[in-house]
Structures are given as structure tokens and as C-alpha cells.
Length: 182
Image (cartoon, rainbow, N blue to C red; front, side, top):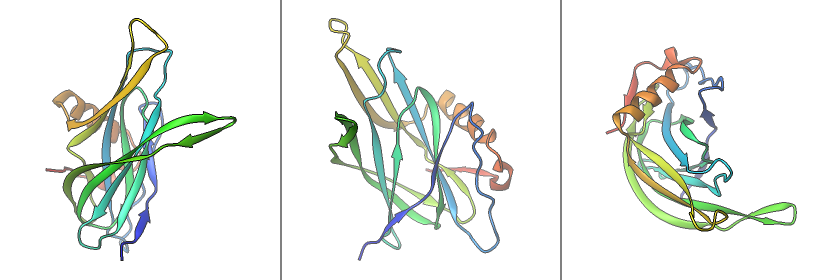
């Protein structure tokens, strides 16, 4: 029987003062950092929707899901309190938001995606790939926009940016060295 696990997730920004949890001797849990790179070609149009990423611990078959709401620039999504082990992202949901009166509704489509990595006990592991989100505006009709996304390897400058953002976080010295997934 597959068991759903929900973990706490933080979004670290350059201006924010995010803090990593303090590791304790009783817990050997790991932290996963997921780089998110978002570009918007227009300041007037925001991101239409976010994503729900889903991954599974290959040893226990427990699933963990977390939300990504894109913002301009490079961000780092932190998923903490994960047991060590072998994990695979097995897919994601796109979450278009539709205004329905005063509420938002979500139309979700499950999209398979696979990327596997190891999490070691009491370590912070950075995923080697990035969630890249782009918003484009139609040149003829400025009201027409569309959002595209991709999962690609980090470029060297993006990798340096992610490392710099992690080093700004409180308690990062307790999670040294930072490990990159392969």
C-alpha cells in the first residue's frame, strides 16, 4: 500500500531570510533543494499557474508532493524532513488557475516525468536539474500569453546562483557540505 507523505517546503529568495531546520542527533533526515528558474517577457503578465511535483521513495514506496509557484528569477525550493534513500520524480501536475467568482479552481493534468537521485542521511542535496518556466506574450495581441516549462540541467551560472542563495540561508553551516545529485 502506497502512503502519501507531505513535507514542509520553503521557498528561498534573495531578499527573504529563509532558514533551514537544525539537524538533531535523533533524526538522520535529509533536505532536497530544487532549483526553479522563471522568466517573464512582460512585467504586466504574471505566471498563469504553478506545478505540483511528485516524487517517490524507491525503498518505502512513500510519495511526497510539493507545490512550485513560479516567480521571476532563480529560486530554490527546499523540501525538508525527508528520510534518506533512493528517490525518483515520477511526474507533476500543471495547475492552471481559473477565476470562478471569488474562488480559484484548478484543472490538473498528470504529466509523467522521471529523474532519480539519492538522498544521504543528514545532508542537503541539490537536484542537478531545474524547473524552468517561461511566460511569452503574443506580439500581435498583448493580451494573449502562454506559459511553457521544461526540466533541464542547470547552466554553470545558474548553479553558482543557486549555491549563493543557499549560502545566504540561516543554519546552512549545519548542513555542510552541500551535495549535488548525479
